Length: 372
Ligand code: NAD
Ligand code: AHE
Ligand code: ZN
View 1 (spheres, rainbow, N blue to C red):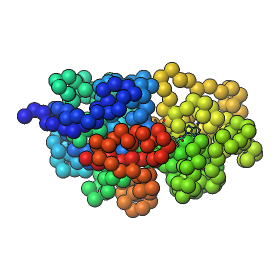
View 2: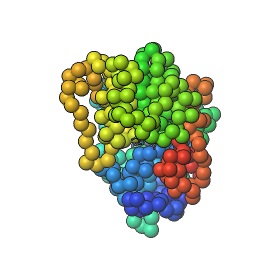
View 3: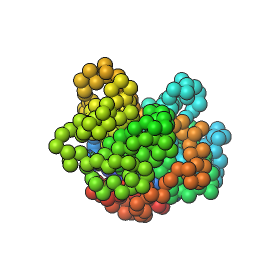
């Protein structure tokens, strides 16, 4: 048999609930791997694409990109993973050979990125179908299907003893936040930090800032229910912008005299991106954009903000090179150096996945983890 059946949550159209159906998954071709997903987180980026605001959004599609699984079959030529290996699929591949992999300045491997953005495998075709009609892949992962096919270069092999319900979060949210602190901003001991948006990403930034022995850590969210966990991760000051009768950037500058050394936007709101940049310290402040903004959205500020020494930066997957660096992050989580359990506020089987999106939109969850 050249195909297997797989239970999947398919997004047939933007802004509609996912439908749980049985899809057909083709066996892996050359350079590809069939993975049985055991756990997958639901990240705001999945909701973003489902909303129709993603320039690269295609339907019907199997979403999901924050996961852990086990290799069940390898295609021709695959040597770096074998059947039974525990893996984390990567939306930022690492081929080791492209200009970006060869550089220590970037993790943005281009080996499969073009076809990934078109919702297909590197040979230009999909491995998924439903009633004979093709379904698109998503971010090179598509983990809202029990079985998925990914490129070999998109797999990090991890310690099989790791807890998959927790380390799946290293497939996106936690790695992105922690990596943004260490690899992108390069926060140093004593530096001040401001985090805008306290979801999975923002809380991971706080965890990273604490690891870096940052000084004051401002945690900013319009939902005060997020403050307890922010404090648990190390926030020193929790601020709700709605409590101020002035722009939050002005409040932060008044609280710090010249602004904050490092600010992080973890929402995907271009107005907040401006607030974060303008909260950064005169002369050297850095502002890192992590949030993903919708099609047509643009950022703006007075150029004077940059002339006076602020730097605007961005990061994807926290600058982490997945195949070479993620296995060690899994070890760090197993050793208690990275805390994952507080992020997992809800767990549920695949057929309840639409609840995970509702909980996110209602501000009630940090991460819902789906188990198969
Ligand atoms: P989330 O929905 O769990 O958290 C977002 C938080 O922002 C919520 O707590 C919400 O209350 C808060 N918020 C919303 N509007 C606000 C405002 N105006 N001011 C202050 N707080 C506000 O989302 P998440 O999963 O943590 O993802 C955050 C963003 O990061 C998304 O845009 C996602 O697409 C993006 N992301 C980017 C990368 C990357 O590699 N660059 C990786 C993962 C996620
Ligand atoms: N498809 C969107 C861009 C989405 C985006 O920026 N994605 C982030 C990861 S979000 C994970 O939750 C990323 O890694 N970007 C770099 C890349 O290569 O995709 C659009 O605007 O078209
Ligand atoms: Zn994500």
